[in-house]
Length: 412
Image (cartoon, rainbow, N blue to C red; front, side):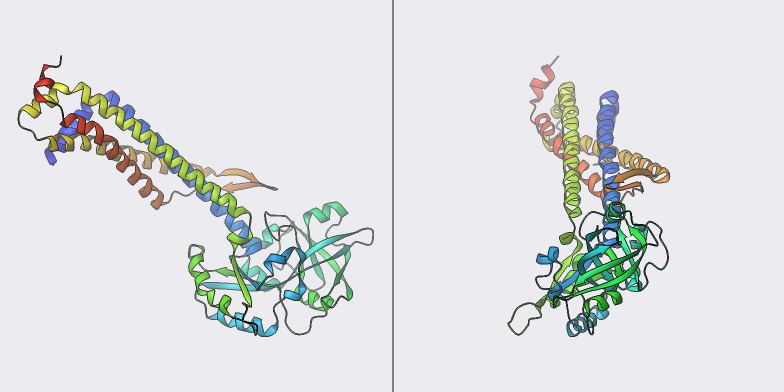
């Protein structure tokens, strides 16, 4: 085998120009795929982090049927104190969960004494919200350590602009509780919340104690429980560990709770799937480049070396050895292209990470992307390149092995 490798290397070196062109095409293909994967992966991770860490959390728990009717913000589907105790007991014992927070979601009428408009609201526990959604404060026009106190409200950016409401203004919030009575509360505007893509992106926020007062809630009652897990890569495992919640039945033998991860709640997941599809498409293009390049150089090598092949065949070299020789040449080209491509990709990605890439997404601008080249991507792409290099060499190798020594030696 050692001699076959030496001969294969010598043959590639002898056709230096064509070998270098083929290796260059393979290297460019590898660079293109790895750099794209690093950029796309970084963008995906960044946006997923923005959505989960500033609004949705990783997992949400609701009363059964709540999500299907969430546009109506139904107060009659809130979870009661007994149900909340059962859930929190399970959450406190779960090793995957880092923190969780409670919300009451409601709709109401917002008035600045000049004009009024409808508003969607999240009543939150500021301390728990900060811990569960660490990037929430970044959505505020003036981020601060303490995002909200009782008697204060954060309003969505669109409402602030449409009604010319600014920080420090006093407003009235009027809501209907689930018994149908109308109640109001005076609140001080302490900030403006920038929008994001998906549920909750245009909601206002105020203290959960104010919500209990205006809704005249006695005891404990919440619309949803938002969960942050310790390791996002273990989202499926965390969902499985919480699955027993969905198996709890009521007196009518119907499920009491429903469980959703962020992929079921945010439309951004469709963009994630599109990025994954594009990643696969790019890899298919790489495979095509490698296949055509290797196939071309191997076929040309067979035609140029007909006499040489005939000579070694006449000397008693078995066809299997000739096949191994051409497969080894393809293997060397694949390995060389994969290694060089990976090195250049690492340099390019590190350079981009050092300087950063500024981009905009929706209404957000001046976002900085810091790509990271994963070892798993390098290994997968390298394996694909090497396997395709071997596959592309099979046909020329068999063709060379089948040459008749007498006919090959007669070639001019």
